[in-house]
Picture 1 (spheres, rainbow over the protein chains, first blue to last red):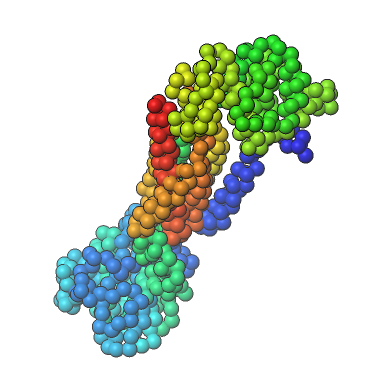
Picture 2 (picture 1 turned 90 degrees about the vertical axis):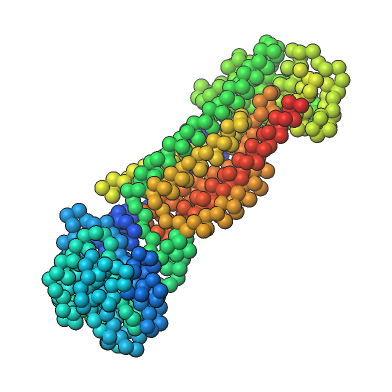
Length: 441
Length: 157
């Protein structure tokens, strides 16, 4: 089993990484690839409902402060509110389609409240005032009447805004129709319904073709699917409002997300590069230290390395306190430390320095053809992080020892200024906390 | 056109995942600690998050952002305590804690995936998780910076 792990030609992290990637791709596939693409639309717009063959569907918002029709500034209530004698002020914001608005239909989900709904009116703000709507203009330049009066069982209102005369409840002039057409080309439409009929939600469909429902009010829900801005689905609506802070948040735009994802690669790549450079610096330093250790130990260590080094490599050396180990032991163990964290096809620094050249790497000789000593080396198990760390500590101590051999040792044991523990004289760094000895050179 | 950008997102997501895995692996190894290291870690997560936030135009409740950043920062402060710094010769090295980067990276990848769903609410949840991870990154690396300064001062004393 251990040998299998040793012999595998792929890095250890490959499977977890592949699994994570597969999960991400599965989520992406389930979320986007199997569904029709979402249109890139500005605030308030939504994908067309299934019964609309084409076109842009714009959801109404109920909180636009720019809607100043009649008394919208002071008497408005949100969608779903069933108070009587209140105004329902709807606003649509959209990007005008290229080529302009060629068709526009308005769908409103309503609920007459049983008061005087037969006198209620639906009006839209335009740039010019007309006598039959002058009472409702409020602070807007003017308005046109779209519908008048509701009955108790009516649930929806469908209008063709480029043919408002299709609704028999109003008598629209050609001028009023032209004003509304001009207003639709601006990208903003403000509508108001007064004042005893609740609005559950509303949608404006641009360039979706002519009206497919009877023009005017209807006693059955229109389109088989109520407008998505209504409060008919309170849990998801309130959750969405909580996390997005908006009652009608725009859906994520795949184009913008693609650009953002590509741009995000730059800082991530720089981050990865810096990490790689920093860790390479440490590896190089460790390699040079190991190389120096090999040279300092000399040929005596080289001759003993192949046998004793590979033989002891199967288990980590035991570190008892800060007992220094001899320089002759240092070389093979130094090689072991480096090899524990390396791939099999890379020779350790000690091997590079010549001390472990007799021990073949896994790619140089297979386990079946190797000599007993070589086989021990090939079957060397991967060490766990703790063992690796212990070996690293041993390397530190050996390095201290070797540096101490090269330089004159301090005469006395010394006490660490940081942790207060006593270190042996030959240690330049505190073996407990790593602090450099102030007088250690 | 939309399909092209979905492909770009997919490729970028895969590349980001690969980059993050490599980075996390490197961070778990012993790394030379310079003053730049924690600053770059904060900068990379901050820049990537802000780029995503503003380029994607994600709708997020900004009232939730500050508490989440603060909560992430607190957890990051605790996480930073687990990072071990020590001297190897005259070089300050350490094995950094990677919890914040794992969480932030998963949130980043998940957000990109959720964006394909077309649901503004789910997308916002992903972005808010990224911001929480950003708070953790700042907290964790702030502790690292302070530890470094303390050790350097002690070492030079």
